[in-house]
Image (cartoon, rainbow, N blue to C red; front, side, top):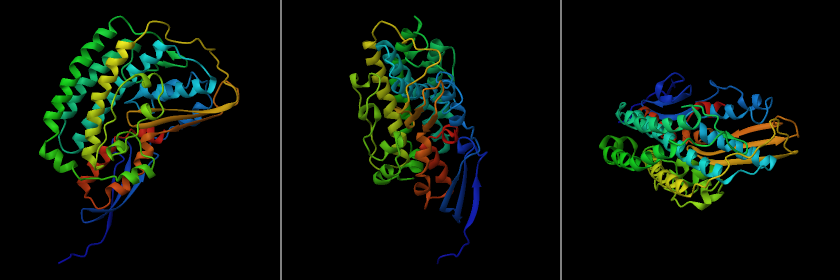
Length: 367
């Protein structure tokens, strides 16, 4: 016999630890079943896009660090690519290889946090997250060697990178890429067939392929739904067209597929780094550009395959020292538009896992 109940609304966040920052969900429930979802944004809005229009092109690089502070190097890269396209600035070959090495290290570091936090949301309290932070610390050590920072880096420069890698960097990087596949195997052994993870993630929060395409999803969220789309292949930048790697894709589009894609992407990143180190040429690491850059009147869009998806910067120049318009195509904001479709029909406990599987950073969403 069906029991008649009245729908009621609960707020999850913006202080809830599983909202991964100041995100708020208004869930309309029938018992524990979700019948409607309203994402509420804006608690972290800092107006970076408008602030950037009052600063020089170089001064804006540190702003990009703070968009996704778990993938700051990638943000630096996407922005300087857009400026270089706008101003027609060449980049030395060595700098291009260094950018790829750094960007792939950043991809691994970001996925380690994304997967660890997702598993925490699924109920594996802290253990997998701490295992993954162990390897992330090694990447942060490498970044500290390169630029002296461990979270916000300001390493990329218009025309290259701020400075060359120190002598101790490549031996330390070699140790990392040699041992990292074994640690990924360890994660697989612990998690891939873990009955709790399978119960919480398999078949849960399915994002169909057609819907993923229609909402312009990108990154592991899109590839988890079976769409083989990666900007490093589709519109290669830096020296990705010289490197061999695969694009892991899921088949169902559920939480488990999104988890699996991130694990496999870490393996591919190690593969890319090894090739880039082997091909790393000598030479300069930066093209000298004026301190106050005056790009010609025009517009440019530079984009990359960031850890969370397509990160793009749209810039408009009026030939002054600051962008006339500055807009960020933030991947996690776009990916969040699928949240309602992924959650309706599931229960409150599933909502936490589904939301965690998207892997968002609120600073990038709200900007």
